[in-house]
Amino acid sequence: MTITGPLKAVTLAAALLLVGATSPPEQVIAPREGAGWELVWADEFDGPTLDRSKWTPEVSCWGGGNYERQCYTDRPDNIAVEGGMLLLKARKERFTGPARPPEIAENPNPSQTQSHTSGKVRTIGKHAWRYGRIEVRAKVPAGQGTWPAVWMMPDQPVYGGWPRSGEIDILEAVNIGAKCRKCKGGRGENRTISALHFGDFPPQNRFVDGRAALPDLALPSDDFHVYAVEWGEGLIRFMVDDRVHLTVTADQWKTASPRARGRPAAPFDQPFYIMANLAVGGRLSEENNAKGVAASSFPAQFAIDWIRVYQCGSDPDKGRACMK
Image (cartoon, rainbow, N blue to C red):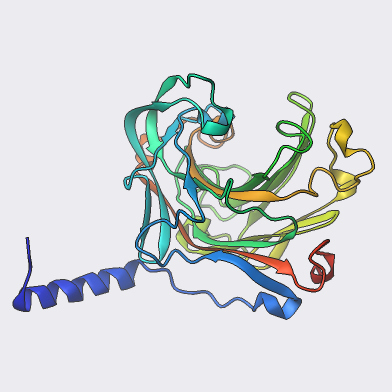
């Protein structure tokens, strides 16, 4: 249908109002260049579609190794770029797809069916970085059974399979708003999680994590916030809105890989790529808070305003000079 004349003008005005209502208000953040960080890569999600020179959607139904309940698809129903944001959308719908993503698929790759669909994008095979500051401005969904995350995995398994080569979790928001006995503020689960995973193959795997509540104890699903990691040789620290909530040093992590001998910062001394996804259920989600997956949590949406990568201009090889 073609719209012309006064009706077209009214429709365009309404569309502009809608865009204005859904676009996130920009938060003033001190320029990273002031601390010596130089912007080397970013996606502001200002285009009409996902920039596939930067991202590859994952298509798989394997549950991420955590018994999650979603199939990740490459459909607009699950991955969209709208209003200057990347939207990862989880829906309750039965779906069948490939069991595993290509890099760990069997041959042939069997099919698997899940109860939900969702979206996941990765820079795998396109972009990876060693050391720097990675920021994401995002608004997480609320609800028992929702598990949005922005995290990093090694570009190459230099020290072996998970978690010998490490994992960096910048943001995880599990069951936001669900009942929580340990949470202050009276509104339920209001903490986000950052973590490092390392060690040996399960069950000898290890991790260090930290949970952060906002200063006013608001739910992180109420508004956009900036989640960041600063990563230098032997030092990693995590922030929410520029407040450091977790600092980890090399004496707190290790890898069981014999390839790490003589490398005290291993496994976090190699390039890592970025992922963003909205998982449904899984052990971390379903075993905590109100337990299980609530039907009322879906559809759910994880909105990402931008993702930016900085590296230390004066110390690109180690990154430590900018971590003041």
